[in-house]
Amino acid sequence: MTDLPNTLTQYHLAVKNKHLDPKVAFKLQRDSFQKLAKSHHCVVDFYDTKPLSNKPYSGAALAHKDIFEQYQRSPGVGLRRGIQNKRSVQAVSLQRLQHEGFADLGALSLAPNACSSVAQAIPTATDKNQICVNPLNPKWVVGGSSSGSAVAVASGAVYGSLGTDTAGSVRIPAFTCGIFGLKPTHGLIRKQGVVALCPSLDITGILTRSARDIDVILEVITTRNRLVEAQSKPESYRVKAWVPKTNTVDRINALDENLAQILHKFHKELGHTIKEGELDWEACATQLQSVMMSDEVGQTHIKSIRSEQASPAVRELGLLGLMQPIEWYAYAQSSRSDYLKRFVQSHFQDHDILITPAYDYSIPDVEEITVGSNRFQAHKRLALHRYTSFVNYLGLPALVMPIAKDASGKPVSIQLIGKPFNERILIMYAAHIEKLIFGNDGILPTYFLSGNTSHE
Image (cartoon, rainbow, N blue to C red; front, side, top):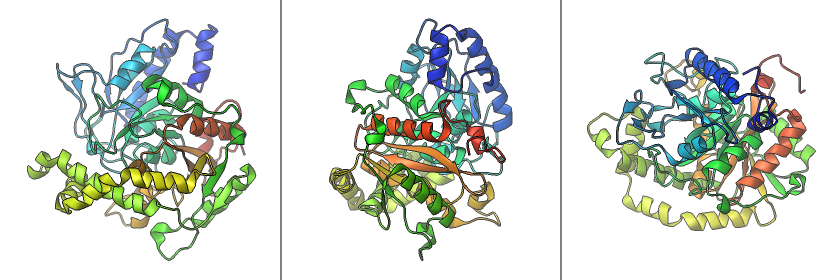
């Protein structure tokens, strides 16, 4: 996509001013997308797309995690290629994007049943057993489960993609690939046509290379009148940053010292209120999210678990849920609104945005979080969900974005959390940070490639 604008907002302007022919742009994107299948193993199926003309985003390329229903095609959900199904109806989110002229180029790979924090071997359009490759560096891990959705965006083959987020499945691959990932407020986006993993926690998420591009896609796929409008001056927002202490006894809850220095410097420069230590209600919400997820995974996939046809991750998590006392799930479900109320009172009484790290360490190599590897480090794999899963339980909106490179040249990302339906406030503030750090042209994933210091 070297001859195309970097962001959707730039694309829209170029088409509007007739500096770009949507038909030419579409062909360039389609060719790039097809090449991507071979080099990064993230495309499950290609679509013979014919974008609508005379629409606001005619020809702008998107793709989606292979968990969304398409017209007469059922998704493979990471277990197989999609299959023809005359009863299958296109997911609502995909219908809305198509109506605005977006070109849906194909289905993207994911962890089997969307149940893993890392990319796993999955069937693709070019091979039956491949693992997604991180465009920034093939040695670095790609987060899951929306792994293909992040790779397609970070590689530059599409402007944006849809994924699903149950415990961090959009935000984790966003920070491992150095891009933007939004988990919206629970209930904001309609679920029709999206295969369920954990119905009470699942939500459609958005991945892009620029904050404002998230707003473009969100505007199309959501019910607009539910979103809280943002102030025109994002620098006026009251922001609290949580930076956990370093070198704690529990390695799983320790923040890497180098990352802590980067985050402290960043927050002080922007004038954020900094809080250290524990985050009120975070640990409780994390535990209750785990209870809900394991129970609902067990109930949703009980037939495949009993017949021993379930993927390993679904089987392990589902069996745990089926064995835990029924009272645990009842408590987690009934207490959800109360915990949300307490969390909002604790963190948003005097602030508009809460910022956490996205991850405690430098982005791991694939071998460091691969079970059975000689380099496996359990604490690095367990920490992938530390800052994401409690947000799913509370149902709050959260946006992950890159802000810097660490000493090894890997992305350092933060997570912005807001009150329910305050997505626009998070996006506006993320765009403010993006402009301060990366300039007017938006963020380029190549900034995070080793040796690239053009913005430093």
